Length: 101
Image 1 (tube, rainbow, N blue to C red):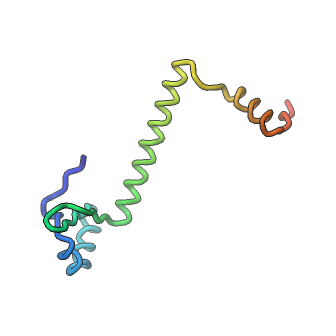
Image 2 (image 1 turned 180 degrees about the vertical axis):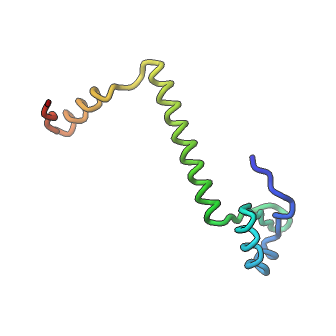
Image 3 (image 1 turned 30 degrees about the horizontal axis):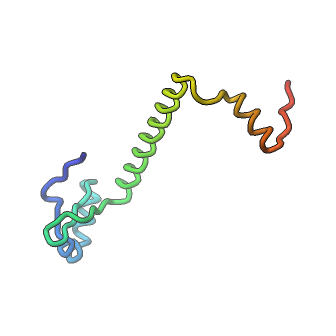
């Protein structure tokens, strides 16, 4: 879990009053701002570039996890070969066999 600097926790009302300054600082530091309502952390503001990087990291983690599950499945002898899958899909959707070279 990522810890936030105490200086980057602000009330929503302060953020609204000083939005331009908060946004400029957030973009410069590339750190999110935690916004509070009635003293309780409720929202996080993040610049677009940091958000995009976060999404890319999540995509990589999900891809690695998918590969890991696939390898574990293969070790257990589960799943189908590409040839089996191809044959099944061609039969199901009435796709002619590929010509052999």
